[in-house]
Image (cartoon, rainbow, N blue to C red; front, top):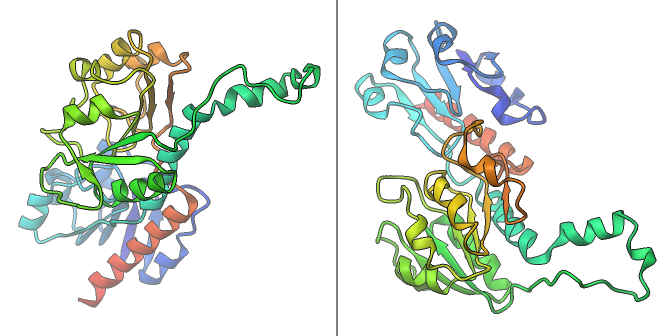
Length: 309
């Protein structure tokens, strides 16, 4: 079999893909432009893609038999047309739950603990000048007793809820599909969740119902000092509205996903990056070393399963 990896760089240079050579010849490309996709998939049996689009045009002009998505989301593949062409499409689910939950907690603690301030205090040589053993000029808070609102209580949302519960947080969740009936935690509507939460973390999919789910009007309901974390998909929080509300209320935003990635020069978020109230990471929540290793094991199983059918 001929296997082509279209965006190898998204998997990281530290991850070993040699197990895939069991199935045949492997060709790797660091990344692939849309206009190069068809040419690179000529005579290819299996394509592995994370974000490169596999469109109707690509399927009509190649002989691919299996599309392996090295991710959970499938929006980069025309699934209906693949079904029409009898081309198998397989993704990998559940590999990044722990990794995404970990960054969620890390972003919250970044704001709660004021670690950067206190680390800089020492690095800048101020502690040795102190007349007392401690320095607490910048107040910080503890998680215990805080109200943590979760938007989207799927596998990742539940993992975050478990960790937050261990910190003695009070958990409430809002189901964007209205189809989650988890009784381990209190369910509520979006308005109540926004009004009562000290921390909100977003773990739902982006769709017509959740686009701009958080916007200027309903973010006015948020408590002062509330922390909002988005590790789901950009577009769930209106980015222009973030730049507006953050100047009117003392809110904190931790974003690992934004509407267009990588961030564009004209992104409204660039205008507020100097603020201490916002931190943006480049879509890394899914990508712990262990998570990416598990992802490749999933791709391996998908190819092996396809061959053995």
